[in-house]
Length: 244
Ligand code: FES
Image (cartoon, rainbow, N blue to C red):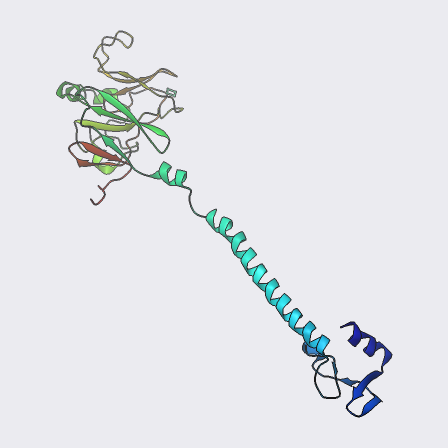
């Protein structure tokens, strides 16, 4: 390479022919601009050193391109991965299966779905009776302004009246109401029909989570989508049971 450059600067190129030494003008190849040899020997070929340089240059170019492609691939993996929802995000949005086989009549169990508490209350026949005759006391007895699936827009606010599935989150400012299931609870008064009480600002709800009139909470407690997989399991977060 250095040899070629020196020749180009001097404008003279000495080559030894088979019959002796003579001075010949350099033959400048038109391939120089496109990567061929710049000078040709009197035999018409590239000098050996330049042929080696060409080979090395092509090898280095190929290696550089390959390294760049591999590097771009590795860089793209975490970038593309960041577009996929994480396992935790998927888990947070996934339905939750609740085993109700050991839930006693009159008992409440609590599970978590999408980071929120979900209650499953197994109501007794007496508890269902406590829902009757109180519509005049309720702010939204028909759940017209509240959040629930269509199959829960009824006085029991449930697909199966025996099981109430409901978010344990007050619709006022998000506190957790507490259970006050007995009629005439000592704290809530002789006319208390039974239900839930939010101690934060005093909102009261019946045993279907329907809010009483003149309470801070604007709507009934929310009923999430849910379905009965079978007699012992409820799927919270889906309206339809998953295919077995
Ligand atoms: S958060 Fe329940 S009454 Fe305010």
